[in-house]
Amino acid sequence: MAYKGARWFLRCKLNGFLRETTGEKDEKGGFVSFLSYLCNMIIHNRYIPTKKFYAINLFGVIFVRHGVHLHAKEINHERIHTAQMCEMLFVFFYLWYVTEWLVLLFKYKDRFVAYKNIRFEKEAYRHGDELHYLRHRKRYAWLRE
Image (cartoon, rainbow, N blue to C red; front, side, top):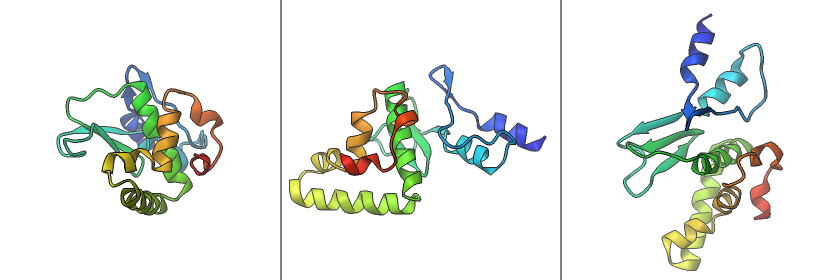
């Protein structure tokens, strides 16, 4: 009974529709269901991310600037990052992300150009419009970008 209450609490409304889980289905309400709902959370606040950004995905939880409304394309962009994080066990995702950004920063000498050329970002921007992309996405698709 306590889990059903937590499950109800963790469901987030996104632009009028409930977000689908992207992970395995666990009909009995076990850890996989709990984790998939946790990774679908969107938290609006004033501190994370900084004023230069509208949203950031940290370990599957999307933090959005207070007063910013995310559209389906932007939510999908962050969901693609969540899938990438799960493939790389979160920590390795961040290590690869920062390392690639530093290498590209040295190459392009521009922070924004380096950011746009990170493989993770290329995949997320390229498929952000495809709202059902995660249903047919191949594992490690960012390697092909």
